Image (cartoon, rainbow, N blue to C red; front, side, top):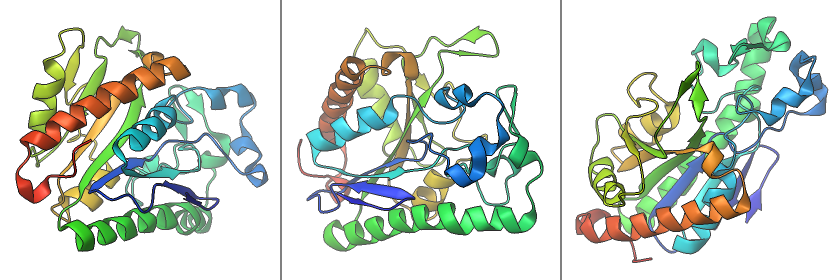
Length: 257
């Protein structure tokens, strides 16, 4: 395990091609930011601050499949690691109806400071791990892990899990097929979000731009907000990845899990 104040790496010396990224693993905001001026700091326990449950799932999953994983150790309200630096949503001024006071008055130098302090180191860590896996295995497999709320804009979301992808369906197509064989699951294809709109930075920069096979996974947070739920979904995903590896071409096949 390697860690800094900005990111943490699980299984950095894993023996296979798998790399998981968790852009919204933490709700941490340094004390110097005074909770970004929020009058009610309890909102930091809500989904607007982090992806509830997904760190627990990914830690268990990476352990089961001996994959490496990179976790961002800062709240997406401070800086959203899955947004482009020029995107206004990088430092959101409002999220799910909650105004973020310190972001509303953010200056250009302060925004650049957050980019250099948080965004760049986190993504350099991902780049470095991918470079190592390219050298060791030829072609990594990148999986970005997220969670989503069961209700959004007063609409209930029926999906248990979503498979998000844009131009590259090498991983998404077989993953969708595998998950849909489990008749107890409601599986979304680019639901509840589309990977095409908005385009996430992590999959685009590290997957599409480098032609590395990749996919984003979204799991509904009320299914994984307990350790029992996280373990269940880590097992579901470990089984799906095991099946996936048997179907993928040998050029991107990893050791069986």
